[in-house]
Length: 375
Ligand code: FE2
Image 1 (tube, rainbow, N blue to C red):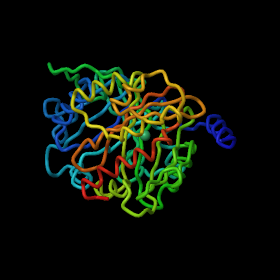
Image 2 (cartoon, rainbow, N blue to C red):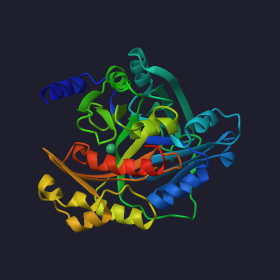
Image 3 (cartoon, rainbow, N blue to C red):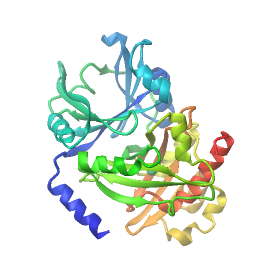
């Protein structure tokens, strides 16, 4: 714990890559129009911006949807020649980019590539009548990239090239506020390489480590390390499979995503009971833990503000650390391949990731894996 604190202070002191927050996440999808409808209907995202044939974008279409600080860009190519097709063919729908909002995207590119960051997009100025944005980017695990977005000289709706999207169809937001963390699954033996990459290249520090003793069931296990930037706005847990009697959920992901990639996005809410009640009403499916999970839960986590019966009915999980507790729940995969899913999380002081729930959770995942014939 002590070394972590020292490391953190050091990182903040010489932060060569100041981050203002998560800018957006881009998902490459097979049908952006339908994906936008799904995320708006099921998760309460609001329409924000659009580019496509009507705006002069001849090759790709993108729908931008937003809920508070969470911005998703859903992109589909409009012909067979566009390189996004390679991503789609290989991975199916998934997160192609985690974009970080920075003060200076040129410096972000120079500082990260100087430290070994793999170049993806050299600093590029894009502009329209609302000003200009500078974007740049480096590669990370699999075909995923981290984009840097500098938008201090821009006051348009999203990025140059997009117009405001104002469909008549709206849904009510469900209370999702911001991206709490974004988890990557990487190949066996590769976790430490990517942790080191984030440490060396982006100045992140290793916030917490889980080994196979923390995260194992009768059948499978995994290892995980969480890296965070200096101010804690950006947190990337990175998982790798560990050997077990049967195929781990990480291997299943890597088999079906055909490589490393983003496994889940944790979206924060300030009222998980309201959020999950709404999501269930709208047809969102969640992983279920057995009711027996709740039998002795209060012995483990102590007293909580919420009524236990309501949490049990909604199948929301509870965990506590030294600083407080957290409530969390995980959706089933959001597409047909068992790959990307969402976590809904409410933090009540706790800064951890729900270690006490790992076993119950992974057993729930394994029941789903078994149904898919993948355990
Ligand atoms: Fe998570």
